Image 1 (cartoon, rainbow, N blue to C red):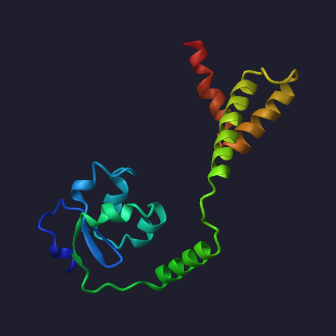
Image 2 (image 1 turned 90 degrees about the horizontal axis):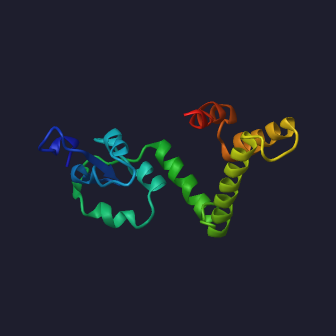
Length: 159
């Protein structure tokens, strides 16, 4: 099968490991939105599929199988990437640690509250210490620019 086997110009076909899938009807249901599929239409999406999907996604993908690529070959870059992923997985570097994930979520939630309250100068007695807490909790831990947050957030107190 070649990429030109699609009957309609609006069809969205992707290839994963040499198999071709017509994912046109899945666009509206794809949990990651339609843009990733639209951007990968007509291409080998193997590396993106493996990187962003759990093992259960293979069952969903199977429903859309329409054929095999006649000229499937893995590029040297993809071969190196896949080897690296396999090495990381074998070493346990990508294993899910649910306790750590919950703790990290709790840390981010609390840093958000701390950044919010220090943004209103309610945490420390000194404004300078409140600003330091804002930078640490907002910029460093939560990844939110405290300057941006103050410019946008404080507007709702005026309205």
